[in-house]
Length: 276
Ligand code: UDP
Ligand code: MN
Image (tube, rainbow, N blue to C red):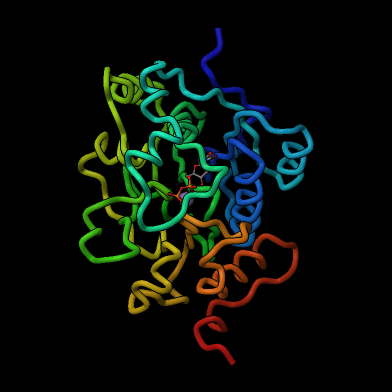
């Protein structure tokens, strides 16, 4: 019997940075994320959860030394799937603050929870639309469950967490318990895994905002922006590999993402802070 998780190789460490990509667009993001993580010199495993991808995409990630772990979407009920269908979420709980790309499928987000099935002691999950600018190995010392605030518009949002970066301790018992809580009759998680995790871990620990700096802070809350302090930069809403309406406003951030996505050198954060 399958438990829904199919690693393509063995673990090499007891800790891992994990991301999720259910389609080639997010693989593009994950490529930049993993390249940026390698630049930090971490010794933790780099892991990608994926559903189905062309073999060439899998091979390209393996060439980057990424451990590929194929997963099934969660075995959620038909009612749950209907309530969290893309058109329904985007229609009934519309995103008024930014645009979600066409390749974003809300139901796929829940597959993140499969990381609790992994064979690691400690995991740090990072969304595929983020890059890591400085070593973040210290995050493995934070307890489950730690996340940074969902701040990109106002200080009031310090009460909310953003599920683009979080710490976890894989455990089959936790995973089974989460599935039970997730798919109760009529359960609707308006912002998918983010709303669920906030409810499942009501006493979540706070990470510094610099461990998950959201791109909109750049133009909405510039007083919070300090290049040399930012450790993880997260491109929530529009993605840096898309052509999109806010691209001009976000140009320095997109240029930095592009540098990390490539093989060449990346700019020093001090240079970004003090442009010549
Ligand atoms: N994701 C995915 N496929 C999808 C939607 C999401 O693989 O169709 C994964 C991917 O790792 C992505 C994360 O789930 O980074 C959360 O989605 P996204 O980053 O687009 O949400 P946002 O940060 O804009 O709220
Ligand atoms: Mn994201």
